[in-house]
Amino acid sequence: MANHVSEYGFQAVPRDAAKILHGKENVVDPTPLAISRIEFPDTALVKAVHSYAKIELPSRTFNHSMRVYYYGIAIKKQQFPNWNVSDETYALCCLLHDIGTTPKNLRITLMSFEFYGGMLAHDLIHMTHGAPREQADSVAEAIIRHQDIGAVGNITTVGQLLQLSTVFDNMGINPNLIHKETIESVVQAHPRHKWSSCFASTIREENSLKPWAHSTALGEEDFPNGVKNNKLMEPYDA
Image (cartoon, rainbow, N blue to C red; front, side):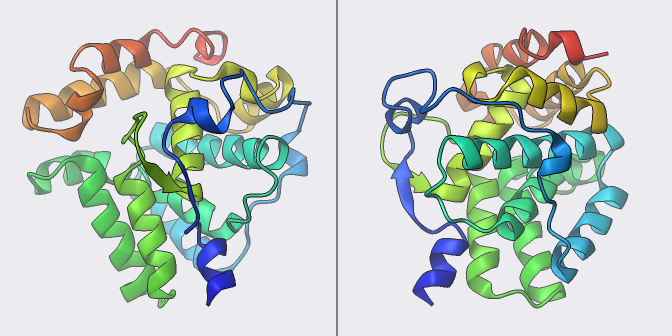
């Protein structure tokens, strides 16, 4: 069980990204990593969830979810090779982390999108597809906490990996974690199609529907403006 728990991402690391990077831009200088050299899990569970996400998510959100997977694996391979969270568990997190932002799901609940998304993911993985509860727990917690950016306390390895990858794609934070050629390879396979303005609009939509939304913790204006003005990804945002 201990090995499975760590493979599911249940190892504590600092919530503050600056601490795991030791106050530097990166742990090591990244090298080019083509998307063809990064395997996407082909387990029955991932295939089922991939099909579900492809149907349920708008195309731009699906592309973002796939970019988050490839960026995260590049970060894990090059910056944190000792994190032994499985690619399967991380892929599940990526595919479902924004399921709560669909037009239907934003309106079906009064909960913040990450929290409702975590509940949906847990039911889908554990109840529908029979994955171990511990794996579903890990995915749900990572989704619920993927916007829980802060400097105090700890988070799971898979949760931190999801945070690093989502803010990299959404806001260009910690730009030196991934090589420019890796970004180009990922974006070519999963285009942004003006994702910056798309997701900024989604944030504003949720905050309008739910003024208490957890997204406001990142700044009612700072967060959507930071997403819209993502300078790192601006060259690729066509």
